Length: 256
Image 1 (cartoon, helix red, strand yellow):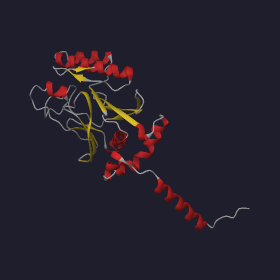
Image 2 (spheres, helix red, strand yellow):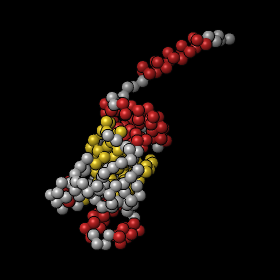
Image 3 (spheres, helix red, strand yellow):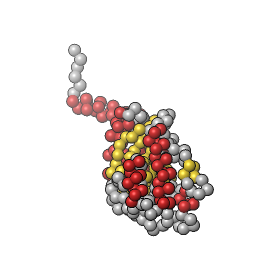
Image 4 (cartoon, helix red, strand yellow):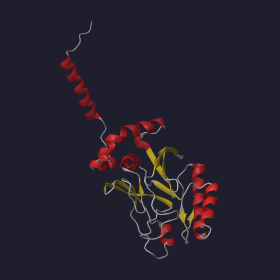
């Protein structure tokens, strides 16, 4: 008959085992470790990481093998998060986030101060763990197409996906949502994803919506031509669920 340890001894054994697990746990490394130096990222990690890992496991994706893609629709006020493992070719949607507020109107951003949210094919180029809006992910606006299309005007810059619910040209997600979105992006970069795509569309680019918004903007043929090009990229991603290979021609038009 096995003896039962006294309760105090049992508690000490449990604590010792927990300490050993912590001591032997693999420490954060690379970009994740760098980001965890910041209090706001640590808070996001503490509140969101366990659920994030669980959701990814259900999709068959390990946290250290994560790639993501973000897709936004301005009219619908939705940001979609797509995920895949590093070795996979096709993304699948993990979840939708309501954008707290979409400033400006439908149509691309062409100059500083127009309060427009850009439309086009971008990627994350900055992580700001000390943002004025809690946490923020910078978008590489103006890209090559924007610079040509701005026709010598100052196109502006500093476009972010960020916390809070105020914005001039950015995509505010509220503090709770940005913690989760930011953490996904940190893990993706830590996994070796060099470029996190961000595709921003004026609306869900179905034929029905194209006809609807074309009728509302019939006096703007250049805008409709631009949207037709965006629709090609939208259709290609919808069909293949793969990151787009995007180039820009001498006129500032996207080529796929």
